[in-house]
Length: 423
Image (cartoon, rainbow, N blue to C red; front, side):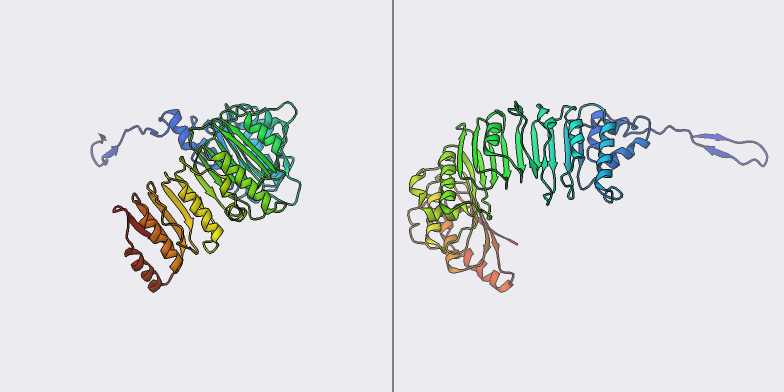
């Protein structure tokens, strides 16, 4: 601080000399990049006015996400042509490698303007590509051949597209994850794609069209989520890798009779039993498995199974109770069990012991006699149980209190078992 002044009536003046430093701008480039990728594209572009150093920094980001957050304000009111032009302008300004590209807008429909965007992205060394199109009355979007030239792809996520590779295409050999939602693809194409992606670890399928057959041959598959039905199915996975299998059957299983669904279940379980670690079965698999009596042809022991989730099980149906009993009896190393409790019959459970079960979660419990007996059984045959979370269906305080008081009185084989009640 410097003091200046004069004689007579001239007042003294104070001046301050200091230099301010732009702390953020002086951060390492990788730190600045991590800051920018947390912003929307519009906000990242606005940083160009901060200083000369920031002017073009946003154009070098390795990822671009055009999602609903991007489509706001004036962009939200733009026509499809103008919206695509805006996205294309952003791509033209981009410099350097583009490793991740997302185009996922709630109102995006199939249109030819998507083709040049994919063409541009295919020239950038893209590693992660996500395209979600709204399913509408127009013809589904057919993926252009340029997408299949992106041989460096590691993650591919598509919705409402037609997946038909050009002649000569085999696979994305570096692919780690594949997610297809309402994608039109044949069984031969999908099976060939999976078998030629040796590094593939994660496969997600939801309501694919044109797909009656599925073959999964992959040495590194660790996660399978399927929300669909197949008339023919086979899987070959390397043993010793612990696989998570979530099989959520579609309720709209038109074109499939009960025998075909049951056969699909049997093939799934036979193929999966040596390697599956996490298994979730939803309607109509559990129901058809119970009705068809296929349990006699299934493995007697699931040694690797540690997590079991069964949805839409009606404990008022003896066959479905037998199916639940089969899984529990055949899974000596089961650690976590999730099941929806409705009705229950205690008969036939006296010789069952869950020596590895540690966690149980029960939903929509009404406090009926059969439900309470089922909970009593689980507490009595699970010596290593650590937690049981129960979601009560009733909102009435008196009814909830009645259930809680009854449950607290149940004998527990595990002294460590803690019962909690969630809303």
